[in-house]
Length: 292
Image 1: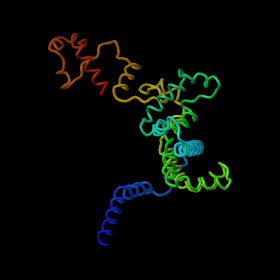
Image 2 (image 1 turned 90 degrees about the horizontal axis):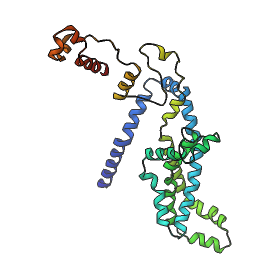
Image 3 (image 1 turned 180 degrees about the vertical axis):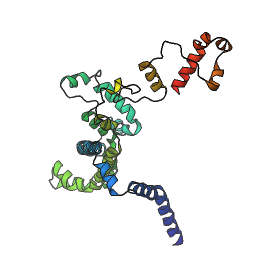
Image 4 (image 1 turned 90 degrees about the vertical axis):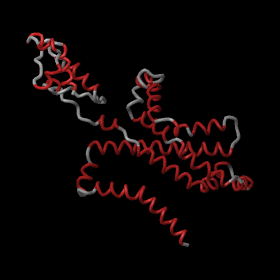
């Protein structure tokens, strides 16, 4: 009795450490300022648009993946055919393939220069960077969940009840609706929950980019303000190269910096003022300061 209670206490403590404590901290920090900031964040234009898009894609992908999962589970468990192992491996493919590879493959197939991209674009239905592309990516990522939850249940219940229903004169659809479906309903529920969680968890930066306000056309002409470019973010060296390309160094000689940086010049550069102002080391120091 003591050992059993001790094991339960250890299991509950481990669960609390991994799940309850982090979730509690997140909830506490979220509502630390009250309900008003949370409600204001959820009612912004970007948040509402993101929730609407998430709900739309969920309502499309979850029923389709549920039907596909049940069909594949019945086919794998109740039928014997060549390529059965290959089909089972293909269902598990989304577990092994990175979402980055999936997105890159969709661009190769449905992009502007892809196999079918130009056809859909000419018809006025672009796939990439739109809702159909998100639906395809989500369907592939959440494809195996329903099938992998239903397959063990089908193997567990066996075929005795289905054979008995067929003996009594029930047709295939009647057997599935009255015998098979009630037996596998909890496996379907678990698969639907996992599919929905997989869909909701995925973040889509394109929603924020699409609803970002248009850049000010006069901002690019203001000194020190770079041109706003949506769907492109530069960091580090790429930003420095972009700034130098838009604002090149002046052609006139640049005076050497004062202070300790003047010691970086070569001895020949400090002999005369003309050579100091036109030495390559001074220009390199100025470029170093701009990059930093």
